[in-house]
Length: 188
Image 1 (tube, rainbow, N blue to C red):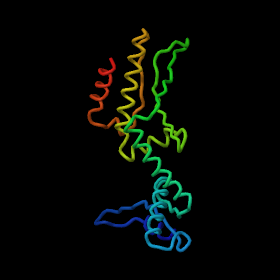
Image 2 (image 1 turned 90 degrees about the vertical axis):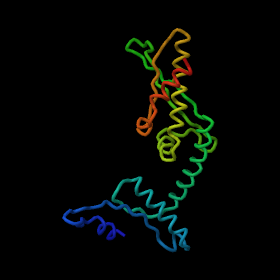
Image 3 (image 1 turned 180 degrees about the horizontal axis):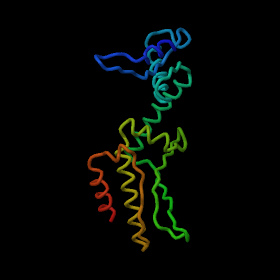
Image 4 (image 1 turned 30 degrees about the horizontal axis):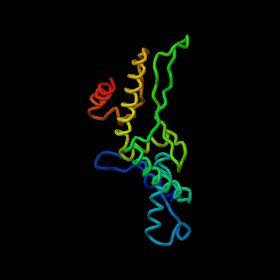
């Protein structure tokens, strides 16, 4: 398998240009990793995806942990879809203070807790949301929560700016400015 990886990585000519690729391979061993074609292909794909996650130009052999990770991702994706649809997230305000300790703003942080997985790190659920197309709706929930917090602070005579983190995909979203304006107008 390493020979195949090295052969694929060698530069090659296309017309007058020299091109090269950085291959990533997922591999299985039969019969240890499966005895039927479908199982072997599925497990090779799991190994390939693990290789892509680790970085380009590598070879990854299937191991049982990859199957467990895949099952976890499928279950987590299902729960994330449900909680995104019903806004099943918790928002925590992290105060920003000046040198004297006076509050000057807040950063709104999204948190997600499930019965199945407990508290899930944003480092895990945000990339998953981006991958499965849920990040825009999650951003909408965050924008409304931030606007609601800012309005609540203003109501008690403590107007403070509230920041919310956006993923690069959200920053490129058409109509982001309109979404933020709508949230601010709706919550005052």
